[in-house]
Length: 263
Image (cartoon, rainbow, N blue to C red; front, side):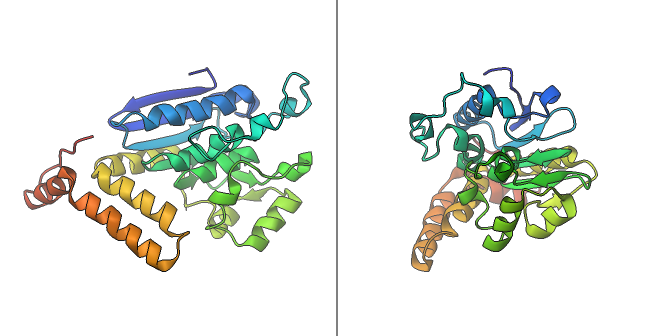
């Protein structure tokens, strides 16, 4: 893992911090690579049941480092835009989409600025907790670009198309209250990182099969025709009901004790 991220795993919860505070955690090539690598590593760790994603230095992420756009050493060719197997997402998309690909809940804590690619990374998380002073923007058009870090998959179930167009065309900065109204932010907290960590601990204490099944159901079924959605619902439930963790959840509740789930 390179120094662009700090990762700590404790009590079945992984804490992932973007660690470039002097640049407002802006995205350079090493940051793009680190985000995908981090998600891959966590996906292989069966003991991780929830993830908290946040930024250092009082900001989440200012978006792309403009030096990437002007650095002649950085070549953005057609090959870089191809998917990174086995994911359908390319290197840049995976910085955001990889959190959606993870099977466990991912909660993002937002403060300061969350602009451009930073917002798209946050949208890859399952939940987004913000403080009231946080600022947001779909800022890519300012640099003559389109938002291309998996926003076509992460935002389509949240914000109406006309609102997305207005935000992306204008590249305007908007506050936490509007983000909450749009559905971009899940909740507003005085301390979003503490709230994210509390939620992650709560989810990590429940059956990992149930938590992962819920994420799979919502991420997949909402895009299916009704018969296929119902079939997926039944398939996931059948698999969850057959697991030892579901039996343990029942026993623990009946015996009024803390459950002991298997990874």
